[in-house]
Image 1: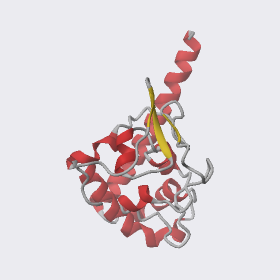
Image 2 (image 1 turned 180 degrees about the vertical axis):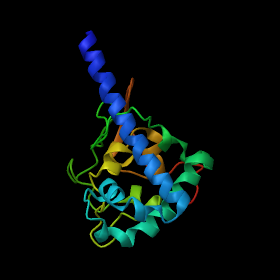
Image 3 (image 1 turned 135 degrees about the vertical axis):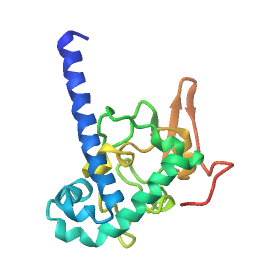
Length: 190
């Protein structure tokens, strides 16, 4: 890697960190003030729905606030959920898992770009952005989705176990570790 490549990567990582930091400032401003979402409504609308027309999403703001409180609690105090906080500010945004870490299980018969009727990852954490009628994420491929955990799911065997995911399996140095089913000390969904 030459100096130009290293400099370019550093500037990319700096940009990703700044974007995440600004999001977190806006998000926690909303959480701590309660009504802050209405002051930064266009930004929050863009972050979660890729749309600056904030008035279309006002109905989601109260449930996103409750969800934000719940996620913050679990990130800080729930030891069974620690595997989801491995993300650093400088990690690249992603719209799919790192294929050097995971691959599609041979038992999965629903195609690569399809989760079929499974939404365990959304249901398990009570995500309010899951459209229960269609089974699709209302925030799919948005800033929040790509820059945080959704777009990079799964990253490890703990996530696969926790969410009871049958689509993915972990690749390790000795081959493939197939992970299915819940973790032994699994707690009920939050």
